[in-house]
Length: 410
Image (cartoon, rainbow, N blue to C red; front, top):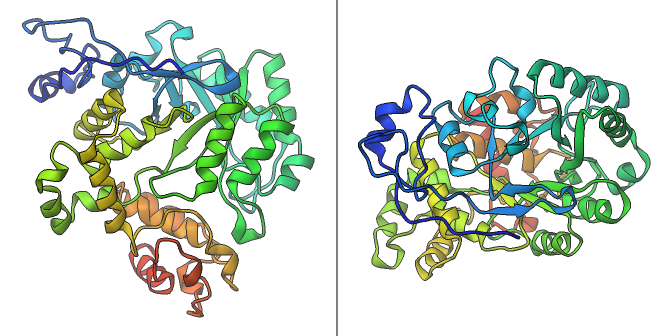
């Protein structure tokens, strides 16, 4: 780990808005120095986001990962702050890749190409060596970047057995690596108990010792099950990189809940917020390489980066996380997937409640509805037996929740 602190100066929102429409390529980030694009301001050299070793890849990546769905105004600021790893970079072509990224030397940033199953979704689709190979080869040609640093198998294996026997992804990667089109192999792993598969932590633990995979990305949030923390610690011990995703459960809802905002005004929470406390909690884990967090606007950018700068939980942050956990109890799914193996209808409960997060926490209703439509069985398939409810560690009335989400997204 190579954590280095940043300075304590904040964003200047007025100056951000003044130049943001043109891309703001010269701006330094909140907590990262003065705004270098504004000539009449003091301009101390900005310090960068901390970086950590991404496991066996050997890459030193920023502790906050960038993503292609960030806004055009946010990306240049993130680059200035030191974000050097970009999730799902294959979505950019040579024409659409942000100038703030491609204007740098190629070795200064790391791009990830994400490969999905073919012939269906992440549960019904299959692994196909040739199609995966051609997908990446075409993506390289479209992007003009020369190569992708990380080839990532999206959604991952259904089970340890599949990881052991189906080597199509690995063969595609080997071919691409020999041609210099990719460098490293990683996986974005989900749980698959609803289709009689295995949990993400069991699959990732297997991959650490029995495959050429060098890193993984999976769900991790405050209050998550112990097995997730254990596999992150194991990964560190084995020099296997880990990126956390879906970390902000309930944060978006808390920001619009009047009662929650009234509680947060109490002195013991002063200087903290659910989002900032969550980022600090993630960064305080030395075994975690980085986190990818939805960042849609200036305010989220400022809060996330300033929290990553401090990366130490204060008493106020600890109290805020406890308050958030209480707010989430009975309402926000932790995506642990404990419930799905108890459902006689094999409903993808965790997926449905993940889409609810898109709608209510990320405020992406259209995306949530589109994802919900792809389900073989949606919330309306629930027979209200209640078998899943005792398994929920968040005390959610899943029967009522499925009906509620179906009304929202169906």
